[in-house]
Length: 150
Length: 211
Image 1 (cartoon, rainbow over the protein chains, first blue to last red):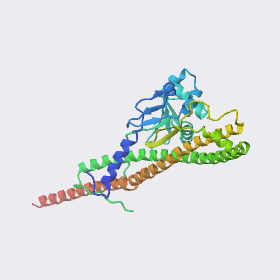
Image 2: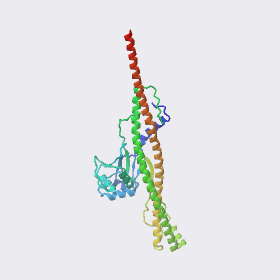
Image 3: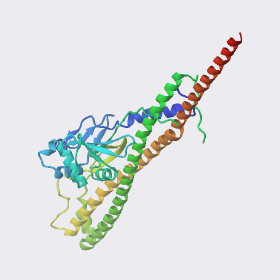
Image 4: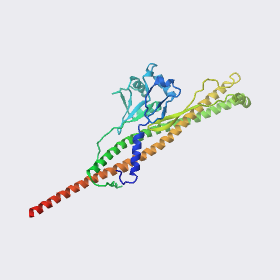
């Protein structure tokens, strides 16, 4: 039941919309770097049907960081998971190549735990500055039933 | 500001469960929206920094290319230079697409690279100054395209931050407090009802004892 609070129905609708759009930009599939380098317009298709274009400059930069054999195992875009309410984020890296790339970009050693590299905001800023088009955010919709009542 | 209690049809347990569910959902959405806003602000600041840097670079490149062009014009003469450059005109190709940053679709432009390195003027009759001018102009073009992308991104990100912040404020200061106050009101109603029930039973007991 929608209450009688002014604009409440409107707010409820916009909230529903917010949940829909928050992860609509995720790619339907990740593509290997080697394939993207061969494409005329390197891109991936997102869940909402739009395309996400990669910068050729960035792809060349990534190709320079790893060996030619590893280019096939680096899946792009790299996904950065943002946890609900927590200050930390994680880069999802299913293979060793992604960890190697992140280590090179951050210029520090990283240890993936359960295929995730935990990063903090200053590191996120560095990653996003260097890899603007080859990384994407994924918002973690954690469900919690703990409500604190006044 | 005192919070307004949401009008409920009947103060029942079912209504309480519904309200608690709505509060849980609203709290969850609030966390996500808060994260989204912080990410968008981070992106906005980064794009703003890049825009300032690109603008400064563009001004430097323009100044340098005009300086080189005037030296070239002085070296060759205007008429000879115009004659050489008449054949060097070519179409510009820009690949345009979309990028997605935290749910915001922002444009992506990329200047297409020319297939061959030929610029259309005679290399025999011209000096290296003209080559330098052409190179600098090319750089200017690349920066203009980059700046166009950055400025549009800045505008779109700013608009989205505004919109999302409004939703976050509505959640933080309106919806969640109103739901919490209503839940508290329902609890008070139930306690009141319990107390009434107890006193009624006591009264009945006294009446029965008198008989």
